[in-house]
Image 1 (tube, rainbow over the protein chains, first blue to last red):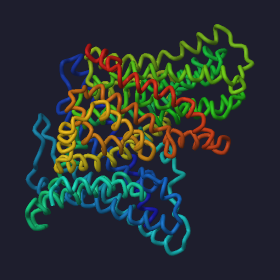
Image 2 (tube, rainbow over the protein chains, first blue to last red):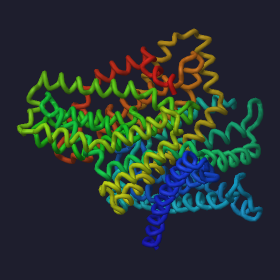
Image 3 (cartoon, one colour):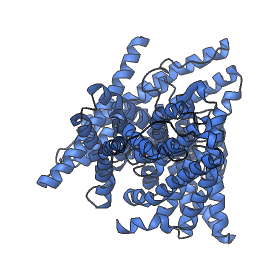
Image 4 (tube, rainbow over the protein chains, first blue to last red):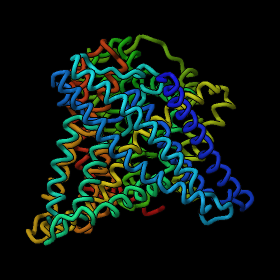
Amino acid sequence: MTFLFEILERAALWVAGAALLVMGGIVTVSVVGRVAFNAPVPDDLIMVGLLMVAVILLPLAFIERTDGHIAVTVIADLLPVRVQAVLRAIGALLFAAFFGTMGTMVALKVPDEFTEALYYDGQLEVPTWPMKAVFAFGVALLVIRLAVRFVGACRSVVTGEPITAPGKSDPGAASGHQG
Amino acid sequence: MDPLSVGLIALPVTLLLLALRIPIAAALGVVASVGIFIIFAWRPGQEFQPDWAWQPTFSLLANSPYAFITSYTLSTVPLFIFMGHLAYEAGFTTDIYRAARLWLARLPGGVAMASVVGCGGFSAITGSSVACAAAMGRIAIPEMLRFGYSKALASGSVAIGGTLGSLIPPSVLFILYGIFAEQSIAKLFIAAIIPGLISLFAYLVVIYLWVRVRPDAAPVPEEEISRKERWDALSRCWAIIALFVVVIGGIYAGFFTPTEAAGMGAAATLVLGFVLARLSIGKLIAALRESVYQTAMIFAIAIGGKLFVNFIALTGMAAAITGWIEASDTSIFVVLGLIVVMYIFLGMFLDPIGIILLTLPLTIPIVESFGLSLIWFGVVVVKLLEIGLVTPPIGLNVFVIKSIVGDKVRLESIFAGVAWFFSAEAIVLGLILFVPALSLWLPQFV
């Protein structure tokens, strides 16, 4: 089960990468088309914007798995392991509550938009529901990963052993910062 | 309870949650959601009525973040990040460092200077300070240590040089600032060029003075470098120069919007990488994986930040603070001084994106009320955030360098090395603050 979930997390990361590549492709082809043939890609702005959903939401679970979500650790690191674990459990709960609520709200729109065949105004009439479904799927993966984190933190509270991030040594976990 | 009181309670609660290691995205998002709920449920002079709040709060949660992340303009961020990772995988970063090293090697602290110049060059095609420090750190620090450079100089110069990543365009921080402050990203990019170059020059001066005072910190490498080697190394930098010209030249000349420039830049890097046989499918996949990882991490915070901005707007805090400042007739210098202190303080503990999203809803209206340019203020804010990247106890760039050097250099040595540059940072910050023309001269031509 855990193995299957990890495959899903990785697959989501690959799909996000593919979405980024397609996004760059659409922007480039559109610019070249506009400059050379006065014909940009139809609905390029809509499609690029929608692909952002896949690029942003799908890797979130993998990031959580590799302990990559940014938090301020300067005070927490000074606390005993059990207290740290309590804080991690609370953090996982709050994270799941926020993203879970948001994901549920977005997911609830999908059935209606699907049955009503809603689409964005434009030449291609791009349907509105698929990326909302992707959004909900990305959030669902994240919430499951946060539940695993919560259980791990609770276990740590009981045993007093430090929490370990299973994927911390993964490539991709190394870069993890901005600024 | 009036909205202002809710806002005043929410700010310390947010800081408390952050201090308790709650992920920044969750802290901002949860406080904003609960705050919005309370504002709708507890209207001034009324009883607490949760039924009034469920629908508008859920509606905001369903619509605001989704609309935010599907913005075309925001796609500039992942595309620039992708471009930077591609350039790193293709080895363009190494080219710049090599050329700078061969040309500067005989100067006092020449290899450290080369690492700073390399950071400046890489900054021209990447939007992230930490990526810049990480990339240059892997290349330059081992070499400096091999030449007998002091650990503080070797690590400190790369940590500080990395801060150029966000100041010299393109820059993720400027894109986010531009979106949240509703300013032209193109103008922000152009505005940062001169301050970025001044910062780079200031770092070189510090290295020069450091080695003049303590020559043993940077022995001159005993190696013969021919003129041909120098010119060969320089000629290999054409790709990175071409990419900079395509991206920033394209924006400056009005050929592209920043988003288009990011797309074209990434595509050009990809094509150059494959044509020059310096990219493989494996490296492309690695660049994609790193890019989406970094993008998602940034936007998780930005989603929470977007709701936080909505929440602060509902509280009316910005208007209240602006009104208070106007009523108390506080000097503009005092206000700017307080803003600078606040950013430096937050920079000691928080990451730059968290700070930008936490503070802009409050600082932008204040700066606007004084009639100051928000383009200039953007440069000031990003410079302050960059200083925060190297200040203890939490200096992200310093920790990145530490993760690269491992046990070879102690964390204290890196901070000690960076400390040499603080006086230069203060002077450059003062120049940016008190000579707005440094930031505003170039954008007038866009």
